[in-house]
Length: 491
Image 1 (cartoon, one colour):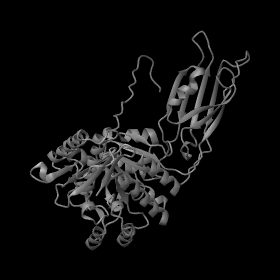
Image 2 (tube, one colour):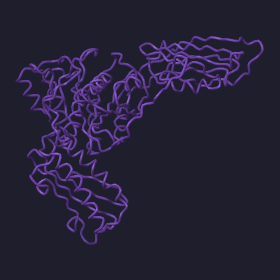
Image 3 (cartoon, one colour):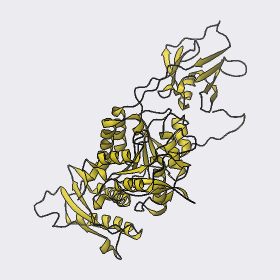
Image 4 (cartoon, rainbow, N blue to C red):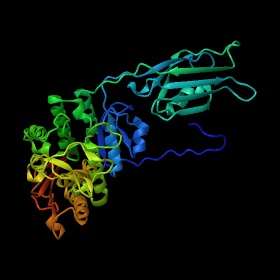
């Protein structure tokens, strides 16, 4: 990048390592201005989001949802840009002699219309008494800070531009040596064109859902643009696919937004009822709905609340633990609600499992409610589900190294000790009920679970947990098999 003459130091920020045990990491799936399509990118600040995906341009909700996540205390997120088969902007550079290739294509780093009008100014100076040949490149794109690459040797220009956030050089013709008649200095001014956006469909969202399911770190998921991009059965089927992936992993919560088309309270209730009609408590306990949409600075129109709510959940997770109910907490980076519901309608929404965002006098916007869409006692509360998610992640960490061990008393004792250590930590943090550990949890891995004659490559362990708020015990069943890995089942 450009710098004044003299000595300058540039420090590359060192990102933190992935931590699968964390439960405050979010995954965002949606439309963004630019950036890699369908490839998960880990970000740790709003500046990281802008650097990887560009500034928000008002065309989608996901960038503003990400800003709301970080403004409300979120620390880490995975972002998957969802887009249809978009075209990539480019221009042709006739470099001529003296370069590794006589012609290049200057191509935008990612597809979309964002790069149309991007200008690339290239200045070449042949070798003189002052030094060897050099190339200077300046890249300017609407809405982006300019990039400058000064004094680059011609042989390294393509490699040096690999650091650009905006363009790449692609060789397009064989090299040609410089000839005596070639000018000492040359200039090229190129403008990229041909980029085009394409709205994502169900296939693109399904690919993103599958991609996030492969990430071990996220424990929270949001799709802020889903309601605007898909409607009808496409929208409902994609939500079901997302909940199926979350329920199968047993370690993440999907925070959903009511589609924009369901603007009234009656429509929102009807939409929630269509999901509840599946009758699958495992799916419904993996979903929490927050409504209505928000008004946020700079965001055009109503903004889905999921990103801001995820930030609140992440902040409370860090302050108090995953078992804390994400309710009665103030939302930041939002100035108003997109809709106001009278109390009778608020009651109907609450009864349908829709958590409200309310505007209260003296406090502003507040998250009001912490329930999932499930009506089952063991799956009704967000805090309890996230406690399960934390325990499942911790159990995997301690049990996976034991997968290939043979079933023996020593293995069972090792497993019980490791799981007891995890549960004791949860008990001391206040996540579990009871005055003593034996009142809060039980770990069973003996002949009752593993009768004589059982396959020696298979170990079964049962864990029962009582959350701090009175409810039924949570029962987890662990199966370690040398040919099936580790399986955690909620009984």
